[in-house]
Image 1 (tube, rainbow, N blue to C red):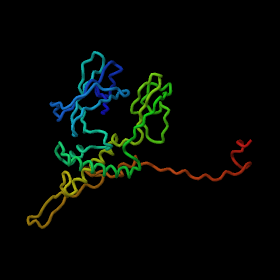
Image 2 (cartoon, rainbow, N blue to C red):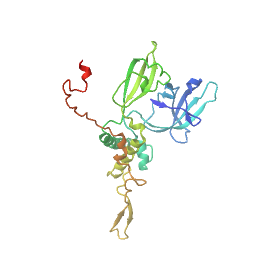
Image 3 (cartoon, rainbow, N blue to C red):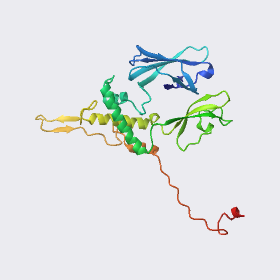
Image 4 (cartoon, one colour):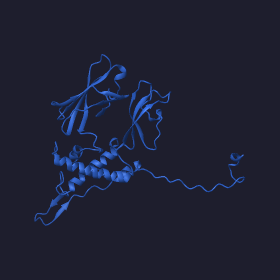
Length: 285
């Protein structure tokens, strides 16, 4: 599945209320978008401004997509050529082997062995982020059926506060579907969504690439970068990596500190003095 947000006139747009429709998605094997390797449609409206496509069965890899939709009833179709997909989706990772390969300068498509090695590097870098943040970076999907929204907020059903759902974690409304009795089935995303956080994606992508670059036999392995070699070959100078904070430096875990889970421990309250010395005297009448 792929959730698509239509863009029209330079802004996110919802065609269905105006009588429009998100009609089709075509997958191409290159950025020139000339050869179609798969197509699907129409999309299903999940919530305001979000439409879901059931993707065609294609081999793993990077694809360039074109989405067609009509902005309103009677309007001319519009084509959005800004979508790029690394398939398959749903692997529980915040980045893709293709993204790491581009960081390494490795040409696409990847071989099965390269893909497997890069997936391992991604999982290792992602595990470092999970350990540092103290929480998973992939949210869980939970469905609650027969929910009644808080009346007065019926124009904001995508707002989690519109639903009687209380969880001590980050919660987002993924989708909602009306039932015949006037209630709704609602899909909630619970937890931190690392794939939607650019800082987390950048950290995992760059560190997975760097680990493979320095691993003997790794994908795109180059070892330490040589800047010069003496004429006799008796001395070698290596390029020094940029220090933290400089342009081109690898991001550090500290750059993710704002999303680190904080642990709170309630302080033990002192025993309340007995009545009549207690400040809550009125409660004992």
